Amino acid sequence: MEEVVLVSGCRTAIGTLSGSFENTSASDLGAAVIKEAVSRAGIEPAQVDQVILGCVGQVMEDGYIARHAAVKAGMPVEVPAYTVNRICGSGLEAINTAARWIQTGDADVIVAGGAENMTMMPYYLRKARSGYRLGHGELEDGITHLLSDPFSKDHMGITAENLADKFGISREEQDEIAARSQQRAVAAIEAGRFRDEIVPLEVKVGRETKTFDTDEHPRASSDKEALAKLRPAFKKDGKVTAGNASGINDGAAAVVVMSKSKADELGIKPKLRMVARAEAGVEPALMGMGPIPAVRKVMDKAGMAVDQMDVIELNEAFASVAAACSKVLGLDSEKTNPNGGAIALGHPVGASGAILTVKLMYELERSQGKFGLVSLCIGGGQGIATIFERVS
Image 1 (cartoon, one colour):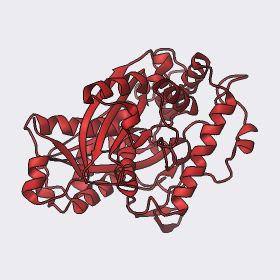
Image 2 (image 1 turned 180 degrees about the vertical axis):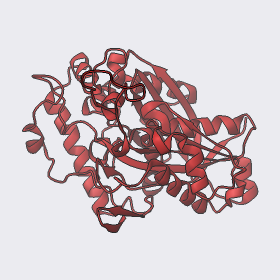
Image 3 (image 1 turned 180 degrees about the horizontal axis):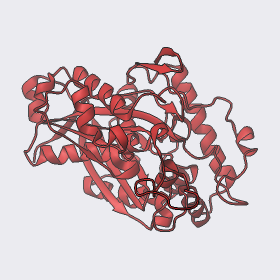
């Protein structure tokens, strides 16, 4: 079976809700990273066989985002594209799907990633099309629907509370994880560790145009003392707050995935080799434990153990997710999210899996580590995990 390698990768800086990307569509974000990833790979757009992009909020002008972003990025119209949606795992699903195309011999060069603009998620009037005869119409928030469990109708924050109760995770433990995420993200930004992976973009904010090249969600002031003052966000006497949960964000990331033989033919040195990938399902009300069976499955596939991982990018949808998965899987906190996680940096849902992969790519290179793991929990009760090896 053909070996799968990643030869380039990049991401945007991550915008906060109604922040720097408030006027930049997800397809424009996707176009920027597609174009840059292809350029960094040193190939021509016409050499790309397929574009695969993850996105959750496929609405309005972003209704078929992969094709729109690909054409905007300068891909020839002959290059096909399609969108995948595995909720929070969509960006990683796009990369894993690209690997399947390559391993079956149906493609040699694929641009894969994810893009999301949660700020632009619309509000809905369900009866507006057919009309209202009498009474008021309720304006429904697309983000609230996106972040609600379709089975229990509970907000994702309640599933995080369920997880904390099941695994005995205290408020203090969650705040400690959140504070560490903030400290590491701020330190990484100040040290310039994200500079090479981020594509600077010119964006319009209000009446001004500025260059946006730095993640804007981290808060240096979010220490344990400040976090302890926040009220529970989802239930009375709860443990989950706005401070120990991920943000609502905008961003994009893309990688160029190739067959090893094609990379050799083109004289391109790969950055990562895909070792194994896996998905798993769990109880929807405990969706945050999705990475546990997914990581176990991917380790079994690879014949490896988590202690062999040098860098772990575990999506911090909530601090309770990070705590539960770390406890059960025995993850080393020093290796997990070394440059901060989604609590600090943000979680643009359809893009997060690709963003974590790009972060892993650059951190493995910086630290000269060998193996890395990317894993995310998924709303509705799933987990996804992929192991990569740095090509030295």
